[in-house]
Image (tube, rainbow, N blue to C red; front, side, top):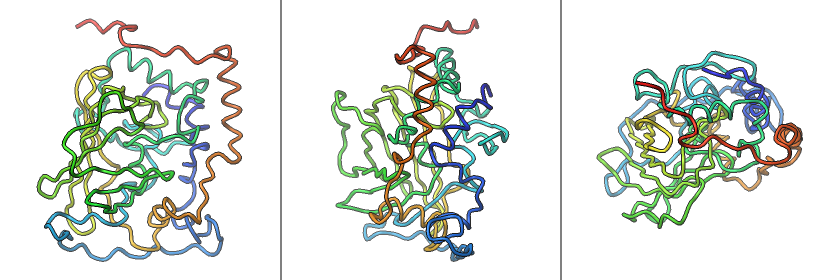
Length: 316
């Protein structure tokens, strides 16, 4: 991995609020020793034994509830591929399951651009640091809450981001309409919820380490319910502008149901609870410092990003 120890990662980790990796899980969240409200650390309630897949009246899996694929902690908010621990970074195995080598199949120009985004001087470019949208894949580093509304499925993620999965529409929005997390259309294939998404604005990042796709990306997610407590998730990205082939990644661990009172349950409730203020902008002093560094490097103008064709392909 290139630029793994870049300062952009350590600064952005603090900025995006993922420095909680240094805090034990039982001390985070509402009422915990490390969260708002103080008090002694709590022991997370035990998850009931797994049972049959719960189903809605039409026989489809009932996904309602809070699920988390974080595993042992926030290991991939920075780098999706295999990486060791470093300052502000918890090590982890690659989340890429296809191709088998676990490496994102970037085109040469795109790999150059991805690595430039990891440079400390370019930390200001990360939209999450500006309290803007998390990417679909980036949301899966955290707990998510599944709900049903008007025949559709709503998925609430980090920073009050709620995706409404249209289960009735068959066609995507006109190409002129571009959204941060695209236009999702869903359907069922057996016990698997398939979400097909296009119409991206090309501005999100899949991790703090700069991984990205373009406005031409076509994303297919598959949520498969295995039992009452477990969902497996994959995300396949096809984007011939950026990658040499389609590729697929998953969560650090299977998505496990969170019971009331657990750390991830409290995180997910906070996503929709108006009593919890969204305080991303307040006290965001680090962003000002990163802006000063960025402006000094580029004379107060945006960096000229690498584009398709600007880096020659490697010889066969």
